[in-house]
Amino acid sequence: MISPRVLLSIDYEPWFALTRRYDQLSGPEQRRDLDGGFTWQALDPILEMLGEAKASLYLVGEIAEWYPEIPQKIVAAGHELGLHCQLHRPLVDESELAKDLAASADWRARFNVQGYRAPMVGISEAAYPLLRQAGFSYSSSIYAPSGHLLDKNGLLELPVSTLSLFKRSAELSAPRHFSPKLLAGGEVPYGSSFMIGLMPNLILKILEREIRAGLSPVIILHPYELVRPERFRSRMARDLAAHPLLFPFTIDKSNFLATLLKHFPVSPLLTYIEETRMQKAEFSPSAP
Image (cartoon, rainbow, N blue to C red; front, top):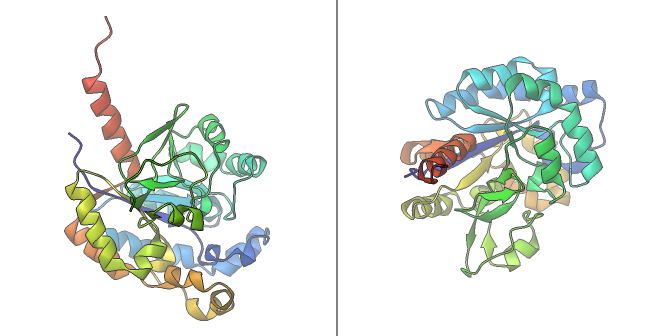
């Protein structure tokens, strides 16, 4: 029997990935200068926060080009290294996704990356064959109630967790991102760091209930929610004024993480998937 736990993930991205204002800034030097060393400086404090606990860190690939030591440090510390994207922007378009996957192919091969998390947890059904062809074994790129592990023609989808208020079956085809449609269907995406920012204590209670029910919920955090970038709120002021719903992503969640690690078992998503596969193999009938 697989022990329930929180499947802890960190979408490891530059601080400016939170806003769409810089999506068209394609020059690698410009983007690295804008990051200002944040992604390099934040990693050691985050690894220290995690301690002996292990998590999935889905890396924006250009960070591996800026600082080749970052993926090495993540793996050396025993965490799962996944792909978030090569350049952070919406990647629902199939051709744009194909280009992004090709751009990340070299460093992914070096680290045997198996897992994918789409930017903004936004993916289409057409993306799954591309991910499988690119060598991924699973994705975590839709929102859905805990307890689902979906087979997308040979590639697994392990959704970020929602709480279903109406207890009715849902269509689990992509896209299933954080949207008014999802909320109107009675699903609260508590695995999102947006919800964690708004009501951290309630999220901890939901996690406790889910684990007691034998489930293993998936949650997301971001580096800028755990280690504060220099002048973060002032640099985000224009974006917060235009898009107030970004505010929960700017709330410090280091205390939430500390409480989570103190009271709950956690693991990377890939560890859970591998344990699930082993259990299924053990209980499958032997071939004659």
